[in-house]
Amino acid sequence: MSKHKNSEPSPEVILPITPMLDMAFQLLTFFIFTYNPSGLEGQFDLSLPSENEAAAKETKQPPPPPDPDAPPKIEADVTIVVEAVTDDINRGEIAKIHIKQNSGSIIVGDLKELFENLKLANETATEKEVIKIQPASKLKWSNVIMVADTCRKAGFKNVSFVEPPGFNISVVN
Amino acid sequence: MSHGASDEGNMEPNLTPLLDVVLQLLMFFMMCVNFVTNQVSEEIVLPESMSAVPMDKNEVDVLFVNLRPFILKDYESKGATALQKLTDKFKEGDPFIIILGEEPMRFSEFKFWLRNQFNTLKRTSKDGKVKTTIVMRAHKLTDYDQVYRVLQMCKIEGFRQIKLRAVTKSVAQPI
Image 1 (cartoon, chains in turn green, blue):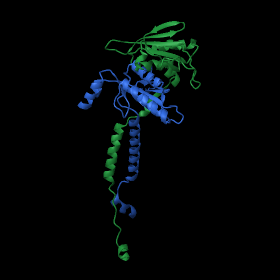
Image 2 (cartoon, rainbow over the protein chains, first blue to last red):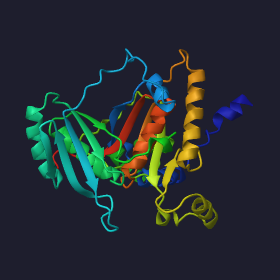
Image 3 (cartoon, each protein chain N blue to C red):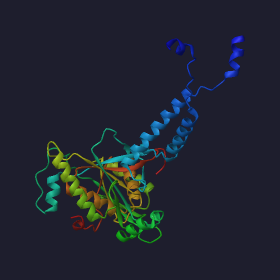
Image 4 (cartoon, chains in turn green, orange):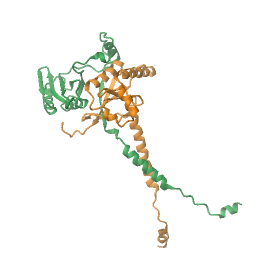
């Protein structure tokens, strides 16, 4: 028997690669079209007060002693108040920007003007990195980010957001 | 010469390296797609920012919160039943909170969900402290007071670390 088996030529095994390749290409095309590069997303850090402080605010108790782990609170010399357009066509766009400092307040109309004034303000400010932004309630988020970008570009690296004018804290609780 | 002549009748392209490359590309895209769908919602169009820093890939203890205004025309392609369900719950311009794996939420529902999440995280934490970071993805058309409200909710519930997402824009572009 074994002699007979050895004399026969071994059968040629053909692996059908073509359908597999077709399938692979189809899947590849699908994933290329649906690929959404998340690598373009970036982020900003935002630190919030300690749990004790937040809880005290909720129950309207006096604030607790400062958290030793929390970063020191530094008051800003410059505050930016951004007003929003309220008409139906341009609702949420920037109407006016106020730059408030200890020395007084300036009103600017656009981001370019804001940048130039902030550069000057940065030279005289005691806290050169800290700035507060108080956007109007109905200002679009993209405009808030644009104002924050302008502040960072002018040298204020630590940007914090303040509650909008007329914001009712009780709606959160 | 005779060796070359005998090969002429059996000329087949070598598909193995091609197949290797194709399968590697396929694997890459499959992994990327899985990664993206786990974290973000396509319904959110992020604002552009020059100063946003790249994401920290090592940060795994995060909760994603997607916020946008409800705009009916963006959801018209959904089925009639799904659309009816949404319009029963949300009016045009209402804040619309999307957490993947959950139904779209209003502020009141989100506050309840956030409290549950915080309590669960606190219970399961080894030292009783919650170190989870909230990653806030707000749509560029969202009103500031809605974003601020979500931030305040996170703060009141006890979350201390919040990151705001934006699409990174080239620094070379003018203001």
